[in-house]
Length: 125
View 1 (cartoon, rainbow, N blue to C red):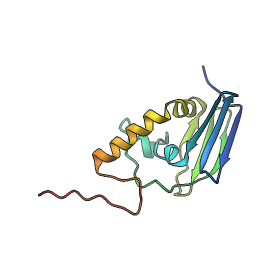
View 2 (view 1 turned 60 degrees about the horizontal axis):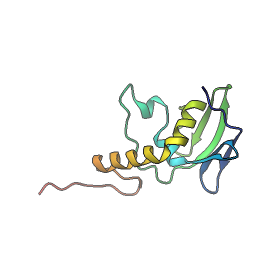
View 3 (view 1 turned 90 degrees about the vertical axis):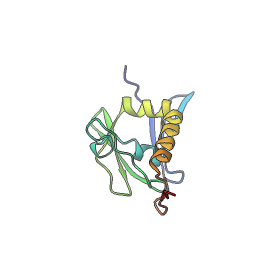
């Protein structure tokens, strides 16, 4: 069953998307989490997700409804092709701690970083 939020707010100061589902169910999703977990083909690939890195400072600049079923999010790095369905947003919200931990582990394993101004180089000695 689809979970529809009762309120959706773009918090520009904290750079988060606020989703309210009830008085005791309020979530804040960071722009970085949303960008790195975008449902777009650019991120999800064609069955094999493409690790996003260097998105530490990415900003969420606009949210728009996409019919009655999703939100279109626009980020300051130009990414705007993913449609975040209500179901997908709810799954991101309730699973964000585990998703974030997995993402950080994937970055480390790939020798990548969240910071766009840093590059990790592995030396073979």
